[in-house]
Amino acid sequence: MNEKECVRQFIREFPEYKKQYDDHILRNGKLHIHVFFGEINSLFIRTKLDEPEKAKAYFRFVEMMEREGDEAVRKIVRRTILERLQDEPEAWEVFVKTASPEFVRKAGELLEALGKTAE
Image 1 (cartoon, helix red, strand yellow):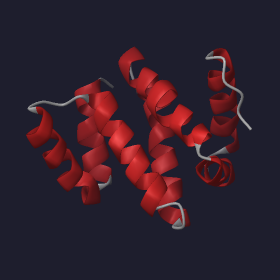
Image 2: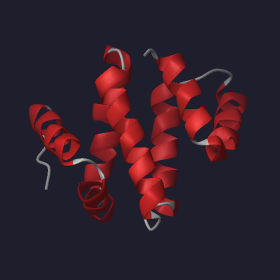
Image 3: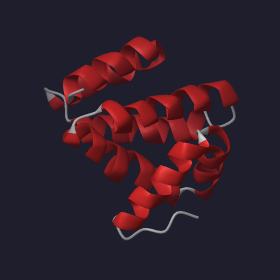
């Protein structure tokens, strides 16, 4: 899955973020995928952590990005999404509790490879 396919799939699965996508394109003139997913991730952390089903769905999608994405998409997972989650202790705790154990383990390995420590 390339970047454009990833964003299309994200909007299909999470139509509530279509407005953020449209606003992003309007502000930037085109898709800057790291910025877009950074905005989405920050918004998610601020608004959805207390909704377990939404959190599970989001983390399943991120896991799918890592598993099925091309190198550019996997870089978004590692550098934009996981690092940001790790920087927010409450968000990381929700991630650890709701993502699959396999993905939590993989996320820890990915962050360690980047010189970060998953806690």
